[in-house]
Structures are given as C-alpha cells and as structure tokens.
Length: 75
Image (cartoon, rainbow, N blue to C red; front, side, top):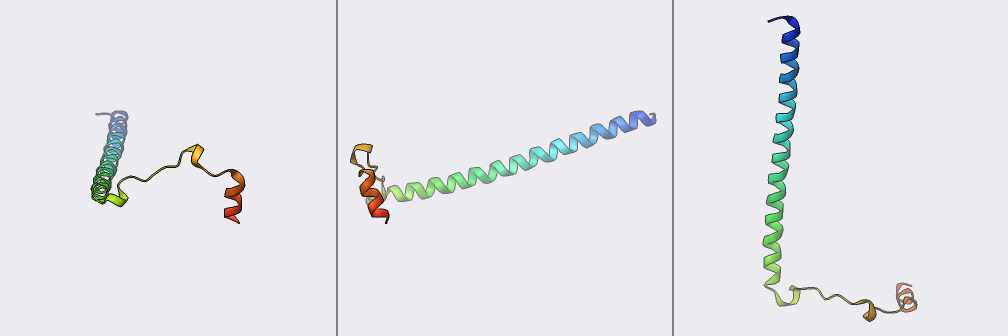
C-alpha cells in the first residue's frame, strides 16, 4: 500500500470515528430525553389524580379585565 493510500485510509477512519462518536452522543441524549419525558408523564398522571390540580382554568378574552383595571392592579 502506498503512502497516499494510507493517508486516504486514515482519513476515512477518522471520519468514521467522528461520525460514530456523534451517533453515540445523540443516542445518549435521546435516551436521557426519553427518561425525562417518562418522569414528567408520571408526575402529570399523579397530579391528575388530585381533583384540585386536574386542569387549570383559562380565562377567555371576554372574561379578562379591561386594560385600565389591569394597570391599576399592577401599581
């Protein structure tokens, strides 16, 4: 094998190692994200069992106070 072929093989090997490392890093992050999502799901299910915390109520635009009242409350 010539020196040029060795350099090309080494370059391919370096690129392969870098891509492999990137895949491992992404897979690790994905695994942690899935675990965090599962933890949040468990907490969410635990909270829905409590009647007071089941669903927050949202005020519609018509139920909101006019701007003057909100500004007065903020002061």
